[in-house]
Image (cartoon, rainbow, N blue to C red):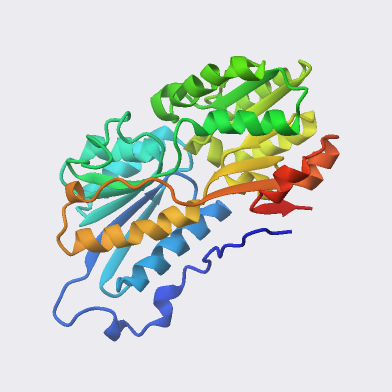
Length: 332
């Protein structure tokens, strides 16, 4: 049962529906846009993200194949692959690049200080060195953050509410792709742990094999719960994580609806489609001459609490009715 529904814009064939003669201004060359995604092209989420972006660009008058040409690259959650594609896109000399996730923007920043970059799904742009401040980013980078560090402590509180017997909480992240090597998420959780009577266990994973080893090891200890923090490696390996968590019957919470919709117990975090939707007007303004330094970094405005009651029942957990009532979506 959905408490608040939102539309995931799908398709990707928007430009095909428009006659090419109507897309470009007469005599004006098409502008060039690069898009470097942190996940794989085959990922179902990727299609929704890209469709949302292209639809929003079309609403601002920019249609791929007409007055704009978009070159996509797909990082697949792999840091080396991301760095290679960042170099490749910059060499194409586009008018602007949309960068998805922290490792992507870091790789792009290594390659260019002049090509404008609009980012989405970056947690800590100031701490990562992408911008001078949220209000006055400076340089060639601006965009849209996906969460604050305090989100991790909120996830811990939700986990304890649904699984009150939990005394050990592990945080899973990849130090190579998470902000500040994972410390950005760990610090607020460690600060809040005493009040909730839980022990915090860092669970860094750098490879798929590490995920296979870590989750069963955590589940072997009684009263253990898991917080799966959002970085691009984790996002790219979400099906593996979800399958192992289900197999090991480990209570786990996540930062994105994608996880709860695919069988995860619960998620609380940003509406990722909204970030791509909001990025399009920034792309529009920069292509029309506004400098990235003049556009403040914007924080999330839409958050979603999603509860999977089917998963809770399988784990023998009872979700409080008050929590269900406050959810944006309850999956039964």
